[in-house]
Every structure is written in C-alpha cells, then in structure tokens.
Length: 295
Image (cartoon, rainbow, N blue to C red):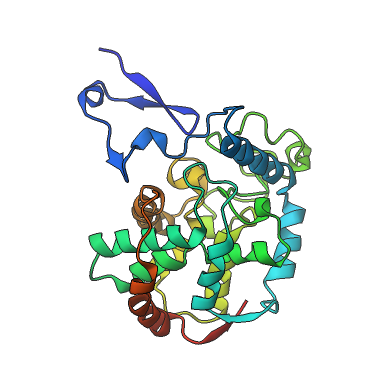
C-alpha cells in the first residue's frame, strides 16, 4: 500500500501506511489535527484575524526591523515589575495569532504549567518555564504591535523555510526577499553556525530569553532554550533550518519538542483554579527569578 499524506499546518506530511489504522490522538477534547489549523475560512473571524497578523509580520519582519527592536527593547529600561505582576497583565491579552484559543493568555500559562507539573513532578524549573514562557508578550502593552510580539518565529537574513505559516504568499512585500544578502539558503550566516547565532524575527520569545539572562535568572539552559525557541515551529515542528544546527542545538531541540507537547496540546476552555495555584508558583518565582526585575 502506498503512503498517503495528511495536512499539517497547511503542508503535507507523509504517513506510514500502518499509521492509517491508528486512531488520531485527542488532546484537551480536540483531535490532534484540529490544533494549529491555519486553513483559511472567510467566514471565521478568528481565522481572518490570524491571517492578517501573519501577513503584517511577514511583510515587516526584516533584518533592519529586528535590529531596531533589539536596540529599543534590550536596554531593559522600560519598567520594573515582579514576574507575578507581569503575569497578571496577561489577563488582558488575547493572542491575535493563535487559531486554537480566544482566552486571555494567563489561562494558557497555567494550563501549560499544570500539564508539565503532572507529567514531570520533580522538575520544578520546568513547571515555572511553562508558566512564564509567554511573558514577553507584555511588549504589547507598551506600544509594540502584536505582529512584532506573538506568533511563530523564523530567522531573518536568510531564505524563509518552506514550513513557515502562509509561506507561499505572505512574504511577497518583504524587501529582504529581494536582497541578495539575505534571500539565499544561508544568507548572512554560515553552515552549522548554531541556531543561537541566527537573528530571529522579533517577538516575545527572544525578548523574554534576553530579559532572563539580563536579570540573572537561575533557570537552567534547557529552560532558556524552551523559552527562546518555543515559537520557532519551522525548526522544531517543520524540520527547516537544520543546516544551521550544531550538536548542542540538536540536544536542546529535544527539550523544545518536549515543551511543545504542553504548550500546544493543553489549550482548551477548561480554566484552572488560578487563585488556588498561585502560592505554589510564587515559591518558584522566588526561587528562580525573585524580586522586582528590569524589563
């Protein structure tokens, strides 16, 4: 029997014939294929919102734009706040790039953290990583448009990977695609230069990673990799950009993929008892990222 394909994020993936006989996994009451469904539907306002967000992102995220955001945000001079207070701000944020949920981001934070806690009870740093992984989205409250805060990330300065969401048409007006310095496979980089040496599109992942390093958090390198690359779906889910990887990147990739199980497949309308959970997570914040920090 010949292998068949199924649609995954708008791109075909080969299936082994034996897999056709297995029931499709269900997470949080949804079939696996119903997560990250970016198929366009002109009647669905959420799908329309998602498409608009990615079109703006893919038009405007250039090498020069990312450099400008790094100059602006990596001074860490915008405000001072505890991690808990920053988390509370996510009560007022709905991610415009997410086709899976329309709930405030803080609910997703606790859903992710609690699912990690259930499966990895002894890794308290992993629980906290799940809770704070989207904290960089606070940029949206300080003047940054959501297309420069949320959504899947990708390297700028080289050819865009085939698995990037809406890859076929959404980059048409991005000037880097016409710039010979940036539009080739390696662009401004070298083979196996290391994923950490790529300039990523600007968003909450890179900002929070840099912020945690700046504020000398005690989270391990695995946690920092999860935070920095959890939205880099073209790499950890699409298999693109492997030509830049070192052996260390491949080791970190295992942790990013493990984190993705809890980040993606826990989105549901079931709301955790956040007030009951705060005491546990406040202890973790005090352990790994205490006090008022610089943003």
